[in-house]
Image (tube, rainbow over all chains, first blue to last red; front, side):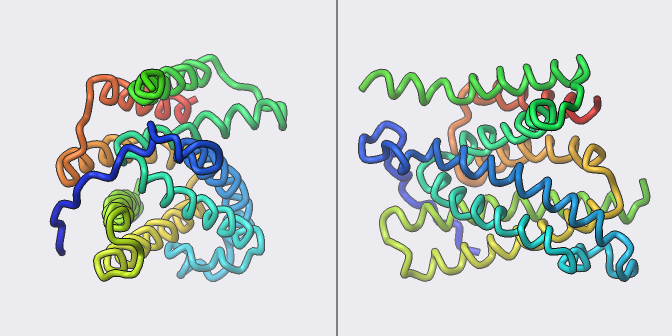
Length: 147
Length: 114
């Protein structure tokens, strides 16, 4: 495998051409939201097909019998394309931690939309993730302020 | 947890991390040279392939396990991705990035425990 190093891409984060829809941060957000929506559809679909051809179940391929899984895959596709755009312009070690906001989105949307309770321990976890996200995004925010 | 399930979880994790690195390499190669070149084709195909393997293994695991059971393992991906990005892609890990990533990892595991 050729892993010859490419010159680092120009920092799109501080470039004015990357405002609005072209902002890699907006694309990370769309990608992350799509992952959360896809997860919900896929879990429903996987549950619905859990007893189809059990000997092949471990491959995950039997879930394709559920239309819910196909909707989930559509959102996975959207998340994939927006993610490719995002990592073209952001380092992986910045974009990937930012994408972990999905682990906050799912419990909070379950709380707001479905009225599910969030335990104190889970609130602590959510707070830690948010604090971590603020730290990860901070160097970038500082760069933008300088312009 | 049976050894088979643990192995499937680990393979799913490893293919996910490898896939992300390959996709990043693919997209880096387009900055200077556009999309119509061999380096992009090679890395986008191998990256997408690795992600597809991870994706279907994850679906299969979801059939047998609760989402809450798989969650802590997903939290660990962040550590592997950051380490691999620093070692293989030579990305610079600043102290705020390291602390932030660790906080997110602990947070994700806490969210999954409750």
